[in-house]
Amino acid sequence: MATVAESGRPHPVARERNFFFWMALAIAATTVAGFSFQFAMGRSSLASPWWVHLHGVTFMGWMAIWVFQNYLVWSGRVNLHRRVGPIAAVYVAWMIAIGISATMLAAANHRIPPFFEPSAFMVMDWTYVLVFAGLTWSAVRLRAKSDWHRRLMLSGAIVVMAPGLARLLPLPLLGGWIYWGVWAGLAVYFAIAMAWDIATRRSIHPAYFWGLGAITLGVALIRPIASSPPLLALTERLTG
Image (tube, rainbow, N blue to C red):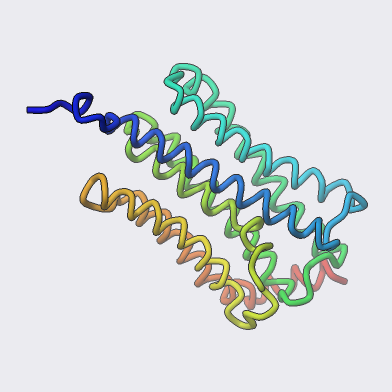
């Protein structure tokens, strides 16, 4: 019987590492493309307030860390990957603080795009950052189970890519479906990951159902939460 090496096909572990590394690059490239497109169109500039730049550097910093972590696994330096892991886990807490505060500052300084309802925009941003953090920390908790760890980390990265991906979509044309339009863009990346599992494992790993399910529930709750009295009162207080 021919072995994997004799058949010329990569070892299953190597194939999986290749897939997750290339997905990391694709997600990072999508995020960079979204913000670069806005900059090229003149909708973003270096004249933005300092907290806008801090927010951008913070979240792009996470993308760099995540791509680097996937590179370490892809190149076989798993021990270094494990040493960097706790730093990345703590970094997520910083991202939550920056994400929530930057969204509130955007509302207070009237920097929310006009095609968003201010209260719904805040809930949307908070939903994405909290779902991302939940998936990422769950992945850290399950780091001993590499199949769960990799897929939950990938799910979190897909979710946190939302702001970059949204900048590539014709959001003003989506009307009342704007939040589901962004969700649909993210679902494409989940579909790619699920298709890989079907091709290599013959079934979809449950981690993806948790990831896609979490963000689907979050998006479904954006408008109900945004229209609640506490959120409307907060929005009124921030926007003046």
